[in-house]
Image (cartoon, rainbow, N blue to C red):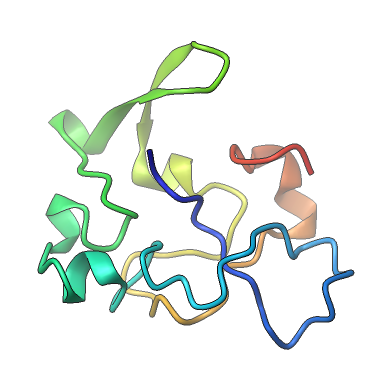
Length: 109
């Protein structure tokens, strides 16, 4: 199981529609300096910045969804709709962008 690439911005009051996850600091979430790359020591090619997801052949990973279907996704596809990028600090907020909510795979916004 992998956490969604989205953090809670503590500067928001909780009513912002972009605030969809309860992670305060994304410590085990996606991004540089998350627990995956600092505590466990994984690099970006071995899940260090992607919630522990390790891309395999041609940068993708087989992904099983809660409804049972499986799809091959790249890391960028898994973080679609957010401001997340490889190399972004894990403590920075990864907003789900209002104009791209339909691309966000992790929640029905």
